[in-house]
Amino acid sequence: ETGVTQSPTHLIKTRGQQVTLRCSSQSGHNTVSWYQQALGQGPQFIFQYYREEENGRGNFPPRFSGLQFPNYSSELNVNALELDDSALYLCASSPRLAGETQYFGPGTRLLVL
Amino acid sequence: TQLLEQSPQFLSIQEGENLTVYCNSSSVFSSLQWYRQEPGEGPVLLVTVVTGGEVKKLKRLTFQFGDARKDSSLHITAAQPGDTGLYLCAGAEPGNQFYFGTGTSLTVIP
Image (cartoon, rainbow over all chains, first blue to last red; front, side, top):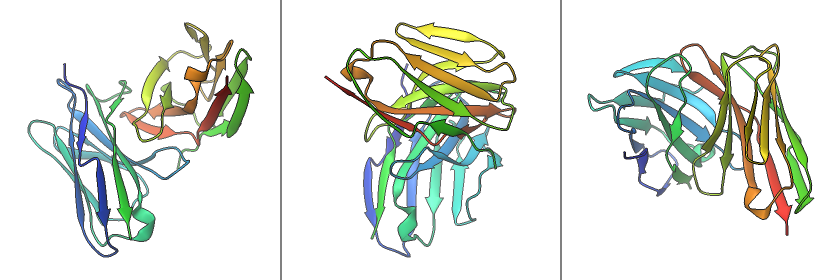
């Protein structure tokens, strides 16, 4: 059974650019959640996708958007990057809705200069 | 916005000592999870507690979910250097949305 994978592992962008981060969910999992984790803090919920539809969103502006594909993999897109977007971006997958355990990928470290 | 407060924020202890980490919220959660995270990696699930008052043991780690399902604690007995890491609690709402605590950074000194 393959776990959650994310790409790329590290990324450096400049302010104003756009970035796309990718996540492959664990086999059999149809729910993917994205989190932003600033250094020394707990992860902050960005949004969740269930069967290709957004299923909830945290307190993030619209320049954070996402997609889920038929194979349940997912993308996180961030437009007009700001310095404060520098963080570890984590993807987590789970089997279905309603409180199921989620499994995290290793994350993508984004640095915005 | 849900908020889970963890205490202490930082903890540095000697190998062999015991410790307790607390996770408190004013909100009720359908379940609560504890994770450990090492630098540069994603959080790794340690345990999920679902029932108010539930106690789960995982070797030297004991997890408790409060009766009202608003708070939880993690107790480590005879800490070892391998226990070093960032400990995170996360509360789950119906609909599978998770809210993480502020984290407790544990250092166990050999």
